Image (tube, rainbow, N blue to C red; front, side, top):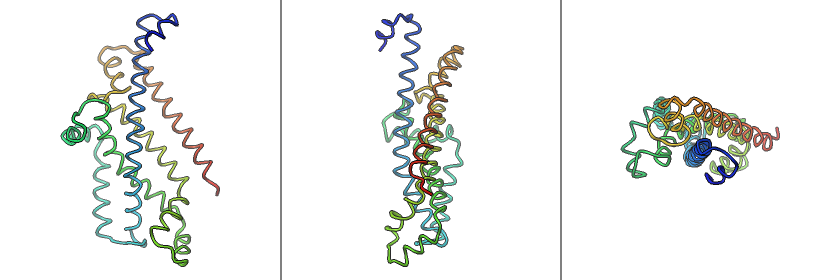
Length: 229
């Protein structure tokens, strides 16, 4: 890509900066996409478990719900930058290193799963209980009600909350750059803060804002597509 930029008549310095921002953007997208997928895989079941074990639902268990809810709240209470440092041994155990974009995915997912779990629980609570009772009266099992009633009916809210989760991950991925997490945050710290190159700092902020805007646009579009109420 660098030779292509030079062929466009750009100076070596400008070509290097564009290449740097391009690589940082790709690294950020890699962290955000993978963290989002893993968070959804674990966060959605966590939210469903929180709902169905709460008062009035299929498998009501106040003790289990209280313990699980406390753990979820505790993880949500830890600031991301502190969590990232605190779990360095776990990160090294899982990916073999605590530095770089792949390493940053571990704290990003650990931080996001409980956050998304609560959002999923909240989304599922928007489903009118009358629909659940109607499904139960027709002999539907709890698993069938979850798959055929709760998740489909709450889909617009779920998509909105997935969108919010992606935006939170984008912000945290930039924060990960402060301790070697890579991506646009790392570029902003190294060039904008340590070397006082303000234009590079501004460009990283603009790219991050664009990522958030595009994410929100896609989330709003998908919500309108599935919301038939």
